[in-house]
Length: 450
Image (cartoon, rainbow, N blue to C red; front, side, top):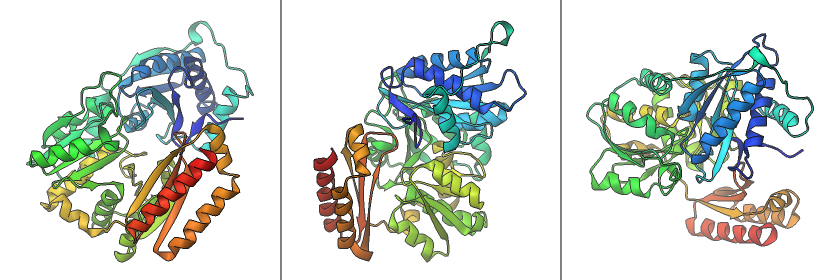
């Protein structure tokens, strides 16, 4: 059985790979799996979406599928992914679905599913949904008459989410001058209101979504415009979100990028100083920079590493009782406030800390030294992705590079969970060496399985 779900939901090119029929069936199966033990004959499921043109189409298909098996649907409109996770509990819903392909181009889309407690589904529940959709292990219910589901619209969804974020901020942003890049995505409907209410003077970038400009040379994957704007306008900081606003990267007053590792270091240090970092531990991934683990060791903090994906970070946090973790890409989880990565919550916490300390973001970032890191994405076919696991020549090449780096660096080669890519990451003290080895490794993989 092929997998529908990667590390962050089901994704594909809208209307060819991710079709209306598939979306409708995912909705049906999700309702069956997530409400199987419920006595509620009409479970309530929330649907949120980002600003992609195809999100309207998929919203309709999911709604039809859910209602056809008796589930009631509450439409949240264009909201951030973490808003869906939060509002499930606030509205006492049985589950939630977010339509988004995050940082991917607009022609892609995706479906993320959250359970009644606001957490992304574990692998076993996704596998159960897949078995219904793909293997047809059980038929879809076909209720009629009054047993069909109803559809409602939550008119206050954005406002309720904004108020939640504000309630988590310990110190206002009064006097701060900041730039906000919304990636022409979900944050375009919430960020200006949120940060203005917190007291900041906001300069907005990429906040005019038109259905096709999401992530287009803007947002957390394209920081150049934000960097330039912050410096030219003498602002204190800039923050950038991705298409569904579950991740955040920042730019300091000098235009330097403050990635997820730096954000985590700054926030972890503050939480620890206020005795609010559970077990003095920060959870990251195998992609976390070596500088972050060194920062933790130097400051008496424990660093726990997981597989790539904020879902795996969260699983480790829940399993061991940690309350803070995240990824270099900007997914940061403040578990005391949110059940998933939340870009706007992260930005609010970071900027609140900067304002409370009356410090420059650049000076706060000096507590961590970043090791030189090179990441090269190699495009592969689906067949190539399968061969990645079995190609002995590729395995030998990776081992050869590991031996060359020794204790002064590391190599991580992995398949993307959301795109047809093999990601080659090298890190070490000798920048010229890792650049050369990374390119050499990427070329080798492209030649063998590209």
